[in-house]
Image (cartoon, rainbow, N blue to C red; front, side, top):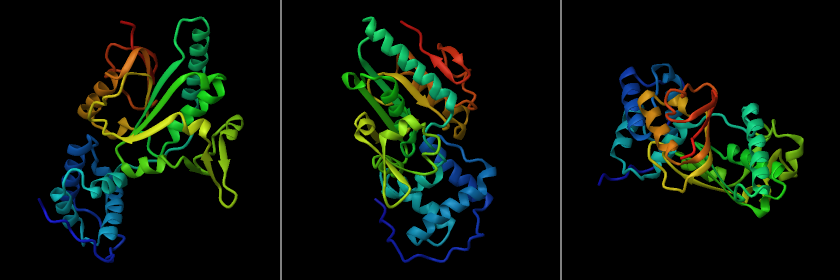
Length: 289
């Protein structure tokens, strides 16, 4: 077992210092093997900026030394989480992609009507894959709270997963800033409590009680029971064709018969979602058995 590298005082890192082409290739392979995410040559500056933060935090002198450090770490070493959190972080906010949430609210109304007719049980399982800091999972809960008036009588479970443990820990706080809240409809603001001394909002129990978060790598198949709806949005753009297909195969296996898969509008996965009915470019339904 390799000896851990001691945490040293912060070193001075030139803000213009960048990874070499060779280092970029090796970092890319390392991230790909771990997550299935491919870092393109066009992301050289972005990678350099984000790895530079880890150099400052760990006191490691340069990109090459940090690369060797990662290679020597145990798979579950906390530094892996810190590194991947830097590399995979992307912008997220509540109610992103309005048309998809309009569809989901309509879907909820249909489910409610079906339960009144005795056609379906009052049970709903939703998975927010690649949930980042929880914005999408809270949006799901907002839609449920506002469009299922008797939702407290339902068995509702929303699972949010992400590869970044830092994102998951933040998601568990259920706290959002002004930018993340900017598209929340007025009728849903009552589900949040605004802090008196800062422009931040915390989700009330009516939302947070529906949701659980945990770390998960989409390259691995999740073991949970099947879901009625899976949101797999704005993450597959970071995968190449091979890893993208593996992720979709893993996710498809956890969609309940007649369940729905919601993808990102621009991720081009239609030809990879096999044996599903395509309803929209971003919406697919698993057939009944």
